[in-house]
Every structure is written in C-alpha cells, then in structure tokens.
Length: 212
Image (cartoon, helix red, strand yellow):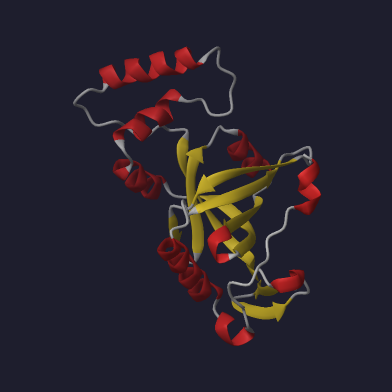
C-alpha cells in the first residue's frame, strides 16, 4: 500500500464555466448524463446514496437512478432495508454521481419521500422477472444463514410463480429525492477544480462558484 501517496490522476479533460453551466441545474445534469452514456461509463446511472440513522451514524451505498421526473431523482428499494429505516427516521439524504472518464462528479442534497404505490407498481412491472422474484426473496439488510438459503428460497418462489404474474411486495417501492442543492464538479489541472453550486431558494435556483 506504499504507493497510495504517489497515485495521481491529472484532470484536463474539460472545463466548467458559468456560461456552460447555465441557469438550470436539471438541463446541465441531463447534458452531463447523456455525455456519460456516450462516453461509455459502465453504469452512468449508478449513484452513491448517503443516509443517517437515528443515532447519527451515516451510511453510504450505491443505488441506481431509475427516473428523473418532476425534477426529482428516483430509485427503488426494500422499505425495510437499512436505508429505508434511515429515511423513515431522517429523510435528509445525499446523492453522488462519479463519471471518471469525464472527470466529473455531481453532488446532490435533498429530501427523500416515498413514491405512490401506483408509480412503484409501474416500475416493478417492467423489471426483469428475476429481479421481481429477487425482491421477494431478500429481506434486505437482514442476516441470512447462507447463500444456499437464498438460492433455495429463490428457486421455490420461481416454481410457485411459474407462468404467473408476480405481485409487487408490500415492503418494496420507490423514493423520490427533491434536491435542495446540486453541485457540478469538473476536475482541472493542479487540483483547481471547477465547482458550480446551485441552491434552491423558494422555487428559484441560485448559482455560485465554490473554491476547490
């Protein structure tokens, strides 16, 4: 591990100016997301989700963005998981996208609320069948005796629902994160990175530049 102190990446791919950032963070996010897909980022919709439990302990994990609707970032999960319990106690969350090929990050802070059952149902119905069965198989974040236990349960449910429509679990669904802050980060030479922050005040977004 001695080489860690000497690991370096020189960022010189692009710049982020106030003129290119514009005045609408969602327009800029959509542009950056499209460019991440075109660049071949392996999972451009992967984002870190940070939550805090009732004891004040932060936790972070990767989830997948599955919708940007009403200017809100949507993802789906088991409501009884650790992240679901955290959000039930404290619905202030943070998201982070990292696109290394483009030398970019997008950092988001906001409020998470559950999607309607109808919206969750619409997404559940288009998931792969294996993922639908997996939602029933996993009591997410709970201890299991073995991998074999999960595989046997998955196989039993697959047999039970063979040729049948799989219902959405009552404990599963989506969250929508309404952002209050969105920061766009573009790597630059000498670690003088471009950081453009949009903050929501009432229904308007105000833009500022942050020191790297």
